[in-house]
Picture 1 (cartoon, rainbow over the protein chains, first blue to last red):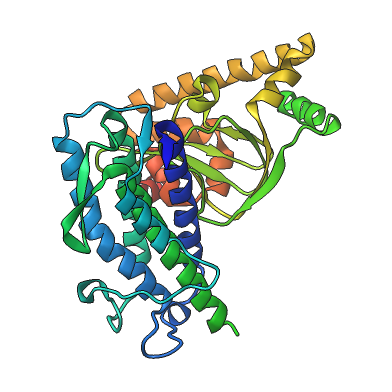
Picture 2 (tube, chains in turn cyan, brown):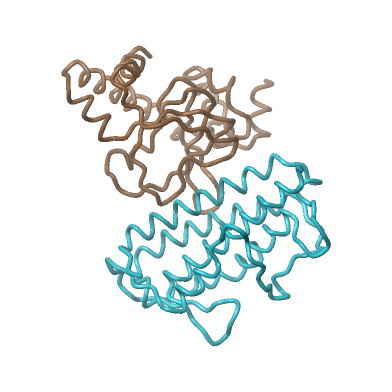
Length: 184
Length: 178
């Protein structure tokens, strides 16, 4: 897939805004609702968000490091990579969410969580917007980042951004589903 | 402000609103980095415009019921803007695009006059704001803003007022008591 970089950036920012707004809305729920778990294996709303925070803990510093050390020049277009596309596609939420395997260190199940999880998410997202801003001065394809799920693969920065946002969307939808079930 | 009222009426009669939107408390109308050239009219609720500085947020402006709110830098330059615009409470807005708005303004010299007046008032407000920021005494800053916009203290939570006045919420409540 080929993108106009400026349009891709606008889309990344808008999707991030929507994710932030959806999570801000969770604040209106009680901590009891936010900790509701359908069964012992499924995540609560806060666990969904905490999972994203654990990812953010890895990706924000990783992206920052790569942006700051990059000497590349921005380009008008960005061509996504095959692996990048594949990751984004598998991450995007489908009508009915399929189960995916979670790496143990990114599984928040059973941890004791409160609303500060939401604060942490929002501030990570603001940092993420900051990183998108910084990335305007470098190249989305030549700059590469490591990914949390494999030591062997690196993604183009543009794909890393797309992947992270798709992953955020997936788990925000999952959290919304939990709320729907909890209120039944 | 009767100028705003006049423009609203012109927009209404010509059916120029793009849509109406509702955002909950704490939700964002705009985030950093986006290009937003729309003009928003606040039917109900309030919002704040802020920047994230090196260490903290800095509230620079508020939007109240029956007023316009806009990311003015983006509106003028059509370039990305650093501003966040966040709802302080549940807020309903009407949206008009820059294109439609400009077409309306340019359609009639009277509208152009009105728009110039609004911009002039805005410049005066910005100058007052600049004086605020250059005022070193917190008490003086408080007095200036209180005199200028008593509405602020009725509609906006203390923590945002304190941020706007560049003081801690504790300092603000101490000043208010004295």
